[in-house]
Image (tube, rainbow, N blue to C red; front, top):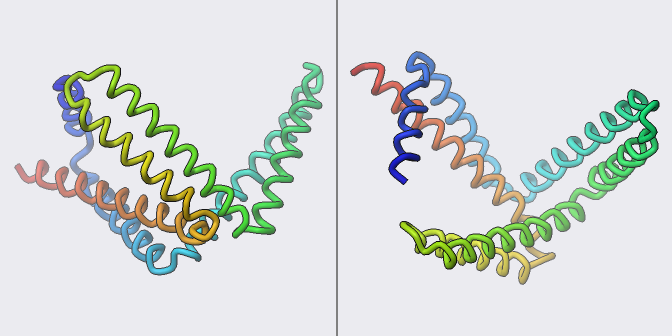
Length: 188
């Protein structure tokens, strides 16, 4: 554990103290976006769903382009089919963002629950230093997954936006803290 903390300190010390303003500015912008997202969770959920749809659309196009580039390998049909499936999923997401948000929330609940189960298993198996925190983290994740699943599909219109808002707020706060830490190191 001490080794990881020492390595983290080395990485922070290697950051350029002159760029502290970029960290603070970017962090403030992300935190502001998090506050905006928290003001309208439905709009944030739809925006997040559109981002997923756009990414899948771009991925589908890239797979189709790749299929034409590897025609001689004999796997072109596989890549083309994969690209078409991505494009179909993207079209469905972009056409019905609220339905897609519901499905994304359901997959998210399953992922959070599975992650929690893994952490509980590791904590109970290892029982090393800090295992209680890992156990608590796993149990909290399982509880969150159960709460999301119980409230589904009604909560689908706000859960995704809530998670996006919280993520933006935490990312922004973390970047601002790093920036202020860099600024204080610069003056000492």
